Amino acid sequence: MENQVSEERIKEIEGVARKVRRHIIQMVYTAGSGHPGGSLSATDIMVSLYFGVMNHKPEDPKWPDRDRFVLSKGHAAPALYACLAESGYFPVEELKTFRVIGSRLQGHPDMRKTPGVEASTGSEGQGLSMGLGMALAGKLDRRPYTVYVMVGDGENDCGQIWEAAMAASFFKVDNLIAIIDRNMLQLDGPTHKIMSIEPLADKWRAFGWNVLEANGHSIAELLEMINKAKHTKGMPSIIIAHTIKGKGVSFMEGAVGFHGKVPSEEQYKKAMEELKEADA
Image 1 (cartoon, rainbow, N blue to C red):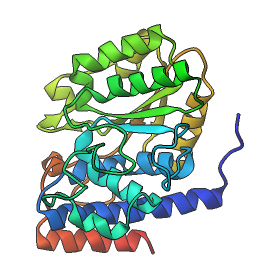
Image 2 (image 1 turned 90 degrees about the vertical axis):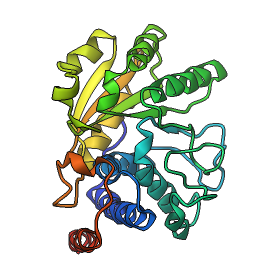
Image 3 (image 1 turned 135 degrees about the horizontal axis):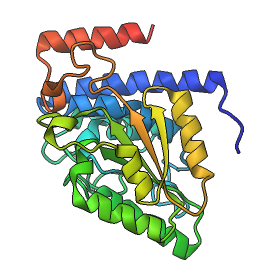
Image 4 (image 1 turned 120 degrees about the horizontal axis):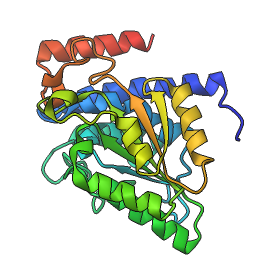
């Protein structure tokens, strides 16, 4: 196993997460549209990957041996764009163009336009299949990279997720790590009321996956579980990351209404103030 990440480095990554959350609120408010809730719940996971785990080169986005990240829940694009900008794939200033006609930062990720985006996503349920294909290609080409796929809660309702899950375990694709942003909510309500997916961990185990669980807002715990997944051989791994929709903004936390709702001017100011205080 690799050495544990230092407390100092964890604090640095937590600082990046606070920046990313501010970017998300600013982007959605400025654009007048977007998905703040699921972007905020996914922030700590993405930041852990981009700043604590993944081998990638912002100056060379197509480096053959780079680790890949696929955002299957494509509506959380604000979090991805903020991570890419803070990593250096494009200027942070460009985040202001989110959802502007002609911008490289569309409402859902577009691999043809945005540096660092590995897959065009947004149609729920497809990202795991894309990630599986990339992981299989890595095996065939004998490349050292790992593929990470973030799956949303509601996506577990999709049959294609389970087809990909079955194929990944059959082919023993151990360079594939999926992470579920388990915030217990989806577009129109709590997951257990829309289509219950419990017992979730047991389902993934039954499909032949190495199943791990983590507090999705603990950088230290996320890094530990990702490290364990990377060292699991002979089977794919999935981390069920328990999160809170709208994490970091008091009135958005656990509020299904902020799945795709833009804050008012007053709410925007309150959110930015809270995130500023969190950074103090």
